[in-house]
Length: 96
Image 1: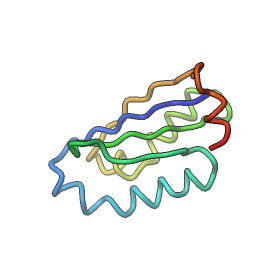
Image 2: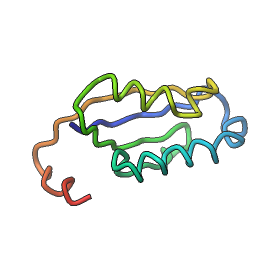
Image 3: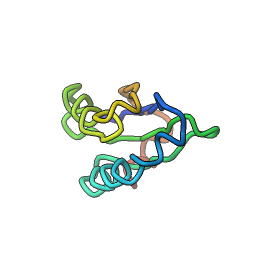
Image 4: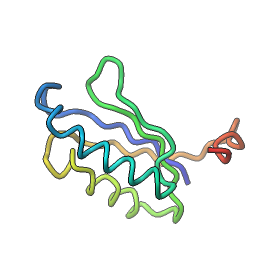
């Protein structure tokens, strides 16, 4: 299963910046584990978007990914998690 995570800041950008390094370190760990395929800030910068590969197809895994993000632990952002079943172009995702 794949999922799209929409991350929305709950604080102004200047209050988010002190948490950015730990958030990005967390995302690099997800990438190294093969879970995060790609991420980046929204434009305008009011949050970000993650494309995730969830190996066990479990909602609990998505909850854990959200809950362990330093942004969420610090209460400065919230996630909207959208499980996703790609069709057209899905073979391109398998190359990532």
